[in-house]
Length: 103
Length: 205
Image (cartoon, rainbow over all chains, first blue to last red; front, side):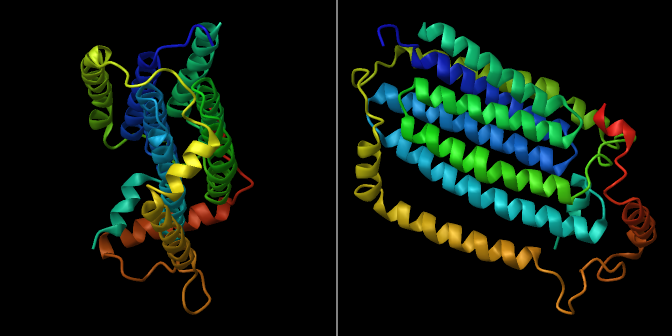
């Protein structure tokens, strides 16, 4: 406990992970992998929140992360259901097929 | 000691994230994501957030990843990212976009160092402190979360339901323009016939 890793390291790591997630969303064509990249970005944000929370010295950051986790769970469930529904229609798995969701 | 642990876990997290993004096979990506989530949970532990580390393992690595793996299994992966990319030029733009974003974040975070921390490095992340916050200050968002989860559950049931007539709603001729119909029918037949037992060989790189 004597040598704590400074929070800026955690925030830097979080920035790197977030960037990897963004690149993943851009370069991949499989909607499932894009979803997993989005999870990666959410996790990076959570990590930054926890690091900031430790720096601020209260538990608010961690409470916020709790909400982010709940929202992420809901988002993944709905997103995967949409992907499965689109796959049933098109029998193919590509983000270009998601244009069928257009009104 | 703490620095060594941090470096190891951070390297693991970055490597698994890169594996998720760069591997072609979706199931490999899912397993990489499990490693990444676990390493982030370990980072929570080093930050003194034991509750979140446990929640991370239970919610993410447990529930969400099982959902992902189920979806990948159901959706017959491996066929999706083969063949020529119709928008290769656009996707190559990911490299400068990512570099720009990282640069931007670095510039923003550089200013962070001058901001002094409010409190000492105590242990604010105890389960008791979080529970106290959640049930006092954040009680309303907490209840809203339950409503959100309920709405998501109902929505997922609605979306994943089959058609009214009991048939799977994949009939080729319903609501689609004539331009895509023929091509889609052929693709649909081919995809339906090959089934789940014949993963293409180029899927696993």
